[in-house]
Length: 319
Image 1 (cartoon, helix red, strand yellow):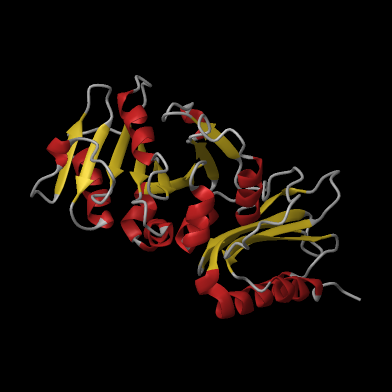
Image 2 (cartoon, rainbow, N blue to C red):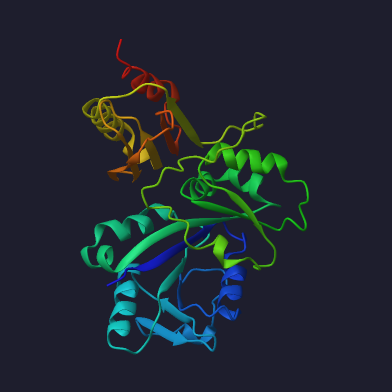
């Protein structure tokens, strides 16, 4: 049975998540999409969905399915599966809207910690919407606004029709999350291919975006930032495991996302790994072939000790 792909929409209050959802629900895209709207969202997708029932599911005219849950996310996910298994609904993709003040971390971990949900759903990626007009002020005031960006696999910049000069904001977003490409969306209108199939939680070698990034120093330092570590020498897999275990032991609560491609000593294939807080996975990828072997790792977290992390990996170099 093919798992159902899940896209998580996050972003601070007023970033445009509901506008984007309305676009998804009203567009004649021919996709079988289910949407779970958090009950504390700024605007309900459909007021008829708000009521006393535990889970309310409604099929829209374009084939989308709207689901509103008054209790736990896990229950809503299981209820959708139950309705699908009964043949009452049919969908092959799910979009979840986080509230503007929600930490995406616990929602992400739901898809790794529940036995049935792990088998039936596949987390495709986290998409963060960013209000180009108010984002700087929000990030200065709320670490949560930075955290939402830190979890993202893709960043959607909204209200660029109002805030036309976004270069410094883009640089700041890149400092927070070196992994996520940035797209623009106007009034919720966006090519859905930019939302879906991000493979954000698949093991893949595109660890960071291959382009120059940091050209200025923000007036206010970010609480959340990216650390990119590059190594031009092979490392022992047991030594890497030791470094990662120590890092998680000391800083797991401050790590949001991390991803890496490693050159392992004596191995012809690259090793890929990724993680969310304490949960991580690794597997062998394709051979290096004609490419010069190297390692690239990116860590995104809250006030991570950059010097200590770099020193730990630099210590893996064999003399």
